Length: 169
Image (cartoon, rainbow, N blue to C red; front, top):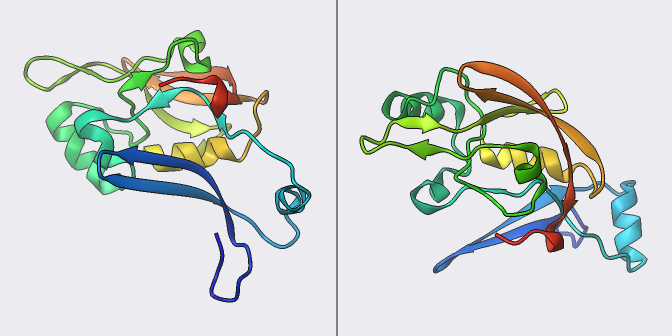
């Protein structure tokens, strides 16, 4: 990503397409960022991922603000603590190996199960976008600890990140 002066201000780390819409997510960089130097030297990097998705009718809630989570929670019974919920876990992914549980609703659209991620390595997050941004600060092979709310309990779940090219959604 370039600013009006032609300076690099971010590196696209993820592109998502849903039908006719596309979204790109970038990691901000500064002139002294070693990632910028490595990319200028031709290094190819794989984006770190855990292997969870937010799809279906929830796909538009990627940037759900904290207040929006509270309002949605009244309908779906997500709980009182905002965080990143997700609707899918990729087969063979770090998320599957760690036992992360996607959102499941009953016939009345009430939450039956599903983890809510509230922090990555102690960094508080309130939505799926913040979750992905926090993960992108690491590299494939790094282990991060997720703070997860599950059935009213807080869990610390270690997850070793893998490269985006290694996970199929």
